[in-house]
Amino acid sequence: MRLANKSAIVTGGASGFGAGIVRKFVAEGARVMIADINGDAAKALADELGALAQQVDVSKAGSVEAMAAAALAAFGSLDILVNNAGVSHLPAPMEDISEADFDRVFAVNIKSVYLTARVLVPHMKANRRGAILNVASTAAVSPRPRLSWYNASKGWMVTATKSMAIELAPLGVRVNAINPVAGETPLLKTFMGGDTPEVRARFLASIPLGRFSTPEDMGNAACFLCSDEASMITGVALEVDGGRVI
Image 1 (cartoon, rainbow, N blue to C red):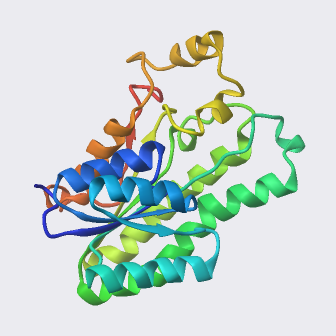
Image 2: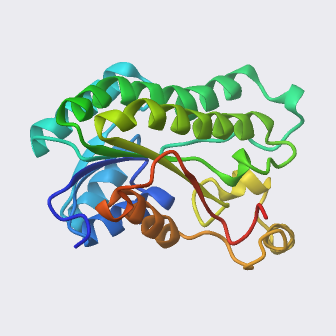
């Protein structure tokens, strides 16, 4: 029970890597809010695990404020924030990505971290404790062609993680990131530009351990970084990628 007596919000927690993090957190004793734009999926998983569900659009200030208020009302305080919600654009030459797709990637992958920080960092600072985990990507370290603006958004997230960490460390708040490689999530087909045995084989050939990241992999890494076992770790972007960026 490594997260006993801790409370957490996981954005994008109803599916994919987010659901893996939620399952691990609950198994380790945390009280968890599953915050997702898909309210029905969040409720279904929350009902299964005994967690709390909250529909949220992380790109909208009012929705993020409502999420934070609901979590604090339910838990009394918040120990862990996982900024997992993310989107991508389809693979294409950088100049061909539509402005609408760029704006969506910027709003969900970048602005959301600012919005959650604006409403929850003051609470953590006042308590002089907390752990924030940003889910970035190997795309931040080893960008793939034709995913230019997605790559850039995840590079921003790594820099934001380090900036947040250095500012908040004296106040008892740790901030880290994880960099997964692609996995069996709703974004996999988008990343690969299709999902056929040939495309999968080509993608897997770039991962030395020979498999995709799993939600369980992300849950295990997230649990460690958000637990007291990692009390001396802040400002890192941990690659959970089977050697993809070596």
